[in-house]
Length: 125
Image (cartoon, rainbow, N blue to C red; front, side, top):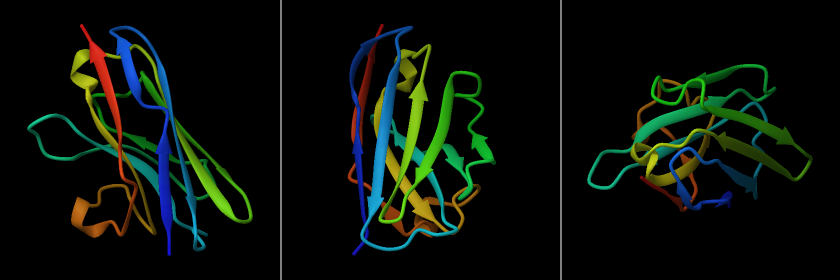
């Protein structure tokens, strides 16, 4: 059984920063991309960022480019993905979900097999 567990969400003022973490364990995620989606209140889930297995390739939604940075750390029993979020805006308020699959970039939500439970990020204006 695969588990993706997020942490690091919270309440922050506009212009502030947060760092999300997600630990994936319970199965091998070798050669799997990892990434983040988010769901703002009353809206559809949307892609935020993804990183390749080796960590050398990243992809971002236009709305977060230049403000968010994704990275990952791979270990024998678990893989961890991070999302450093700077210059946060009220429109970044959402539930953030960690995801993993062989391919995450340009995949629809129904095509991605592994999801975390989500962590809430609230940016006050």
